[in-house]
Image 1 (cartoon, helix red, strand yellow):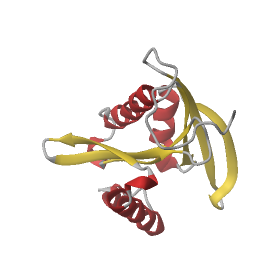
Image 2 (cartoon, helix red, strand yellow):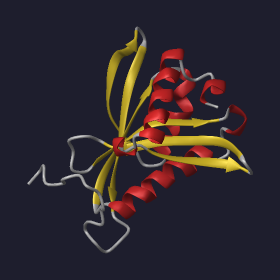
Image 3 (spheres, one colour):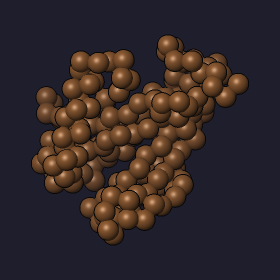
Image 4 (spheres, one colour):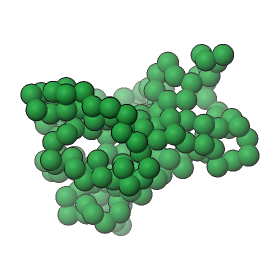
Length: 160
């Protein structure tokens, strides 16, 4: 599905295959994947996980929605699933996503902005000449009464 969107280069798809392999064979790597389906057909997916060496950091690594399903709320639902999941896991968190400045990513940038993500910065010519890296983040607070509801083996004491 990611290949058919035309949004990812061959080397990016190779990395995605590695991430999916790790997800299936090495769950300790910490990747989490949610999908959106129409019947049995997967029309979108999102890959995210904890940011190593942070107490509160999470990253969205991949978000893809089939071309014919874009603009129908699938991407928004996927990002909201991530937000809800993290809010149930932790008292507070910071969710980060990086994307390209290329025109084909305008919908993604618009989605993040509409969902309350703030632009943290731009690294010019990051991916290649004329293709900037745009960094967004969103601060999250728990939906539960507990300040920490996180059940993981990771040590959250790095800031203490």
